[in-house]
Length: 417
Image (cartoon, rainbow, N blue to C red; front, side, top):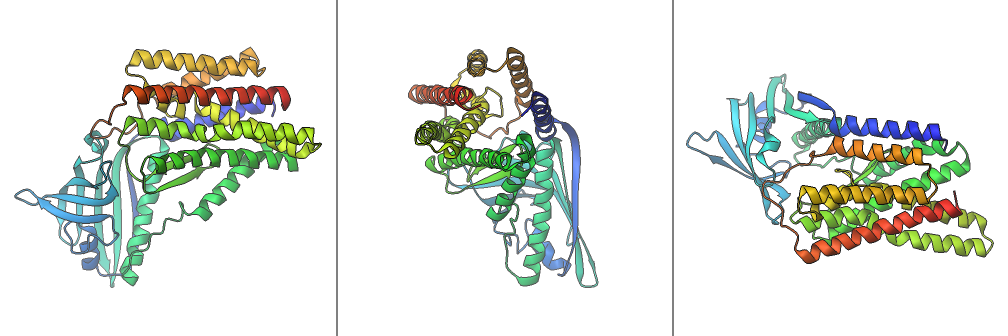
């Protein structure tokens, strides 16, 4: 990969991260509509929070009117909260015209801080014509970054698809096509093909691109395993071509230790694979299997570099997540972040990276950290804090994992690159 190609690749990814996570889009309204082969009254009872069929999708377990005018509804959701009980959400009804339209805002949430819902409003309109009903779903919120807006848009489309299916056959079908393993495998293949030209449009280049994609998948597998260890009943992975992937747990975080452990185990799981791959490469080389030696060396190099990059002290990256839980105040966090960045650059220098490139890398880390700082979703209640022993264990784990991947990068530079 040439220097110019690397610069273009890094600039593209930084710009994409800004667009997806940071760019201020302001208050936006997303609207989807669909003609459903069902009478308006039936759809009203399914969509209105106090309707007879409000539990049609399984998301709402119970809806209870609140207040003397019953203009608020307490919803018990099917999603598990941090305490293991269903998440509850109190909504305020607006502009209700029976069997025609209504809107609602969220006034309380047992899981998220109410600031998350400050600009949220959802409205539903029904128009019946010739035995069919046009359903219009509109959702307004303030967005920073394109990623959440895209998620919300496709979530609305999926809701209409599911509603249409339920109205026609009387049963709910979860049409989560995007999260299906076949779709995610396809996205992994697409990602491999996109990055293939970076390594040359040859068989070797395709192999290297495939190895890098495998490294990304194993990293997310580490997060998923950590979710399971910390008590999540379900977990899934969303593959994002070029950028990587996202592992999602089955409930909100409960403890700061849980946040740090899950973040650390992405690179922590792969830390076991780096020395194994290096040993296998050395053995294969000594046993006159040059192709196998290069494959193992490539895997070790990509695994070490990718995971080391994820441990840099950027707010949204794994390293930043771990440090924010370990450090008790902003001064400690700033000093720890600076120290980790210096060590990261030192490993790069030890691997033979030119000083100019290291300065650019340091600048990129700083820019990413400033771009993404403070963009997390705040829970309603503070997470259970770390005890001193947990803080020590996490700090030791971060140092060990960071060191393994850093030394792996240096080994790859000396023996492979």
